[in-house]
Length: 245
Length: 136
Image (cartoon, rainbow over all chains, first blue to last red; front, side):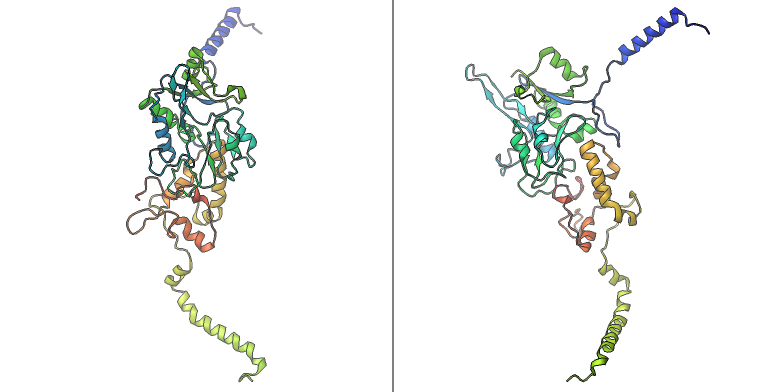
């Protein structure tokens, strides 16, 4: 039996190494998922908000979210902030020492260890394989434990009967709901409506991407300038990062 | 005291029943009468094809929808061809003004049968009961 020549072995090793470099870690770019395929557990969808590019008086993300999900707009005459659902809120922060004011959007922070899922008695509050936290409204009994458990006030309860909901966002009286990162858009390969609107009509402050993909734009920006997570001390490993806070 | 002897009464009742049936049967046998008795299920949009023959869909649609909903919401497995949205799109019912009716209307595709069977479904307390682009 002939031994492989030393040169051939070295050549094959070099070729293998080169291929590894070219392929690198598996990238999870935003792409339409074919029908019948489940969400990818190797993905962690996340958001980055650069508050320096987020104008205090801009609400493009909020408007886009309300339109996409079929919610009332805060400008509607019958809008009731105490009862009507809000998936994103612009929270105005003012430093009393310097007077510096920012108004970052705050939505479900898509925790890796979500307290809403921990407390849900029916399993309605759930985390999808790609780490999107959402409510399976088929199981929700409207107990609102999740609303009390969420430190970010991200969840809303539907108080009234509704008609003509958006087909991609079924919602009705007696269920809790919140931002689900526009799962219907992600599944067809589009970014969430708030991010698309911010890039188009706002200051381009919001970036959407895969935290598990080291080559994603989101991770590159985080590596360059860092990022803060709200109430990181709670150890919930949230999926929404903020810069400039 | 009755004009008929006591022991002949059951025979009389049977005769009356048979007479009533004999009178009613020709009326029931007409297509118009049958249409009034059974739900008039609206035809699907022309050129569309259902997942299974009507008889099978009548028996299994609830299981199909429940199975798919769990897969779609919890696992993210989307099957547009087998979704509720697709059912409502092919089976949209238009009223006399050309507008697609909602589940509030007894002419809605789902309600035609469910009203007949006295089954109340709560799908439409959350799901839209007509296509998003339907004339309204």
